Every structure is written in C-alpha cells, then in structure tokens.
Length: 359
Ligand SMILES: Nc1ncnc2c1ncn2[C@@H]1O[C@H](COP(=O)(O)OP(=O)(O)OP(=O)(O)O)[C@@H](O)[C@H]1O
Ligand SMILES: [Mg+2]
Image (tube, rainbow, N blue to C red):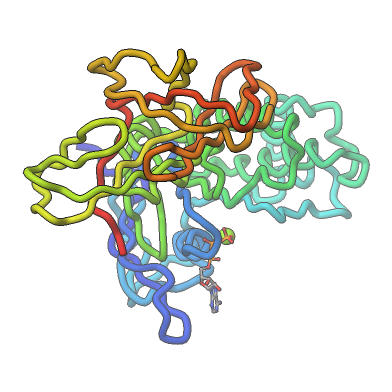
C-alpha cells in the first residue's frame, strides 16, 4: 500500500507553557486537498509552520511519502522537504521579472528554468507578463504568479495559509477554482488553512475541524456538515437554533413534539440543534396551523420579531409562544412578514442534532 503523501502524528507545540497545538494527527493522500478549518488562534498556522520546518514541534512526527522528515531529534531542513508554501502575505521579488520570480526556486540552465516558468504562467493565464515586473500587475495577477512560483519546483506538498483572503470576493472564486484545477493537475497534496467554512467546503476533499489546538472532527465536507460532532461544529458552518430539554425515558419534550435522546440518562439535559434553513413557516388560520407530519413533527406558533431581506432569502426571527424562546428561520424567497404577525413553525426532524447539554 502506498503511504500517505503527508502524515503528521501527535504534533504538539507549546508557547510559554500554553499548549497551542495539542496532539494533532493528519494524513493526506497524494493529490488530495485537506482543509484545516478553525477559529482565529486555534493553532492552524503553527501546525503549518511545523510541517514546513520553520518551527520545531515539542513532540510528534512528520512523514512525507513514508519517510521521516522530522521528529524531536532528527530534522530535514525546510528547503529539502519538497514542500511548497503560499501564504496570505506572499511577496514577489520586486526587482525580478515575473518569469524570474517563477523560476527563482529552480535549478538547471536558464533556458530550462524559463521554459518551466512559461509553462506555469501559461497555465495561470499570465504568460504575456513574463518580462513585466510585479508592480505592473494587479493583486489577483500577483497572487497567480505566487502560485506559479510555489508550484514551479514541483513540490509534493503545498501548504497554503489563507492564500485567498487578500482578494476581493468575485476575484477570489475564480482564483480558487483555477488554483484547485492546477494543483489537481500537478498531483500536489495540499494542506490549506482557512477560517472560512465556505472556502473549506469549496476546496477540500477532507476537512479537519480544529478548536483550541485540537482536531475535533475530520471528514468529507458533506459528512462534517451533515453529521457534526457537537454544537460548535454545527455553529461553525451556519447560524443555529438550540432548544433545551430534560430527558425522561430516552425522550425529551419540546414545543415541536418529542425527540429521541438515546443513551442519555433520565434527568440529564440535552440540546436539540438545528439550522435556520431547516425551519419551515406556515400561515396562521384562525389560531390553527398545519397538521403534524412524521417529517416535520408538531408545528408550534411563534410571533415574528424581526424580518430582514438579505438577497436570495429572508432571515426571520420568531419568539415562540410557549417558552418564549427566539428561533431563526431563513425563507428562500422574498417573503418578508411584518413584526408582530403570528406564524406556525415546523422543523425538519431529520436535520436536528441532539447533543448532551454543555454547562
Ligand atoms: N511564536 C509564538 N510565541 C508565543 N505564542 C505564539 C507564537 N506563535 C503563535 N502563538 C500563539 O499560539 C496560538 C495559535 O496561533 P496560530 O497563529 O497558530 O493561530 P491560527 O489558528 O493560525 O489563527 P489565525 O486564524 O488568526 O491566523 C495563538 O494564541 C498565538 O498567540
Ligand atoms: Mg493563522
């Protein structure tokens, strides 16, 4: 069996007695893209810096293609790891032409280096800039040159730390897709750091969700989104609604009917977590709502507190009549109810997650 292209095991890094990377393990197959996704300060960049070799871990190992690259004793220097890097604050050399920038890390005769630079610049649509200088290029163009430069030496692994965050939204989508195509074409394995869930889902074969120095969940974007490990994992990808209830006989009561809480002891609290887009809205007909169904359970009535039109959908906040809880719903059209209006809410029961309550 071929070993993973990159494998890190139990990486630990402490600063001033504080553990900022706490036994992080990951492996990436050849040609695959893994996104390290997590809030600011959770240890993403530190993890990347250890893999690149510019920072030493306090414990743990790094293997590339099955070969030890670094443990706490042995250490291959950064420039011999066949690892390319692209960071948010990438800097092109201002005194070198675009072609010289791309060819910078290559060895061999000048004509060969230029040919490889030309191939990559072609690929990112910038071959005509080969003899220009960085200051003559736009931000997005410079980004593509930086990508070409990082890929020129054919690294086996590419580490990218929020490489697209300096670009405006519309430019970013295009460059992301183009970058991904190019990386896949070159068969490069990628570890991409981001704190934007949308970017992670767009780019990744696999997402590693990181929090407080640890990886809390790892898997395909679809699985992380649809089978989150805990409430924070749901909340990282979207707004959430939370209902609390006490368990009796593995069931908990809510305004929307009963929910199963298997394995939770009597008297314990659970949280039923669901996303605003899984809340349905129906009209009030003289105090009555829609009939209960297996899919949506029992409807419950709420009063519109606030409604905002946000483009492709509307965001509506309700105060529930029973319990007074505020719930959010997104309505995928231009329905914009007036505050004070009573409406009936249903929730997609198959899209609710039941977790033991914290705190
Ligand atoms: N050289 C250092 N000395 C002391 N503390 C450090 C050092 N480098 C990082 N830290 C701390 O380690 C923690 C993790 O930092 P890191 O840069 O890895 O976070 P991050 O997940 O990349 O965050 P962001 O999304 O904001 O870039 C932070 O609390 C940071 O202050
Ligand atoms: Mg960072």
